[in-house]
Length: 286
Ligand SMILES: Nc1ncnc2c1ncn2[C@@H]1O[C@H](COP(=O)(O)OP(=O)(O)OP(=O)(O)O)[C@@H](O)[C@H]1O
Ligand SMILES: O=P(O)(O)OC[C@H]1O[C@H](OP(=O)(O)OP(=O)(O)O)[C@H](O)[C@@H]1O
Ligand SMILES: [Mg+2]
Image (cartoon, rainbow, N blue to C red; front, top):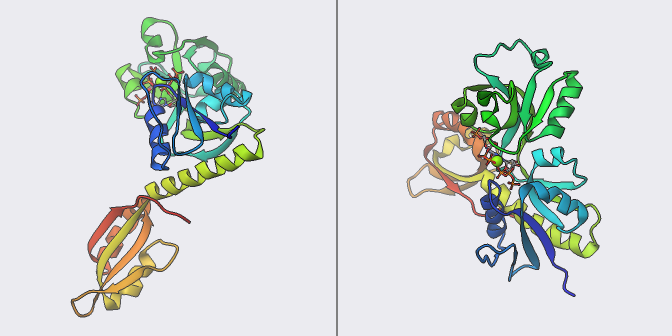
């Protein structure tokens, strides 16, 4: 029988779009029937299983899925014995403890004897134990931020990203327990055939992720400034320099990480660079 990879992806929710987009940009097309729980790729030996997020770690441990896209926070909560192969850079959030804005808070010991509502009891308990805090954990499966308002708890422990849910519910963040982003994980006991398929998928994903982080940069520069400009550019290899039709000027091309660009733009302009263009890159193969 042909070896095919089973990839678990969240059926609906915050990880769904990012997961499918990543496969797609790696050239893996999924034939998506509406409400299908399993879909096959016709151009890569891979099937996608659409599952509830909270079930995914166990499916990978059991080998029902070979690999999966899941949030790091859930791996911690489920104590999942899987291997993280790649951080994906989306669905970034943190698990935090928050309290009503009018509550007094002088430090973590103020949580002693308090009731904390959360959907992440394992992670919270571990954190409290490490800090030597004795609090009562109330497990609720959603809308955790409402708990203090309805008298169910004194504090909450939930995922935060923009902070707007906390703000809307009159809560302030006091302790960050962990930081999370989407990752690809795999089962620890796969056949060499499946491992070879995973290597192919991961190669494609890395190619896409690298490109997402990088930009192609072009600028015009007086020839006598090219060396100075090359020194400012935080790139691995030296830039490509092409002569312009205007005497004494060149076009300087390179690849730069987007974040780093913002750090050097002023310096580039001061050094004499003009007409700076930043262009997206689709793929980078190393
Ligand atoms: N506000 C947020 N910003 C960024 N990432 C988030 C946010 N909330 C959750 N996440 C990440 O996305 C993952 C999925 O969250 P989502 O709310 O879609 O599913 P869920 O309600 O936890 O699970 P299920 O599919 O089992 O109902 C979380 O485990 C977390 O890693
Ligand atoms: O800091 P913010 O950007 O406001 O995001 C935080 C909110 O996002 C998540 O809920 P989600 O919207 O996924 O709803 P859910 O409870 O239905 O999963 C999380 O549980 C918080 O409530
Ligand atoms: Mg959620």
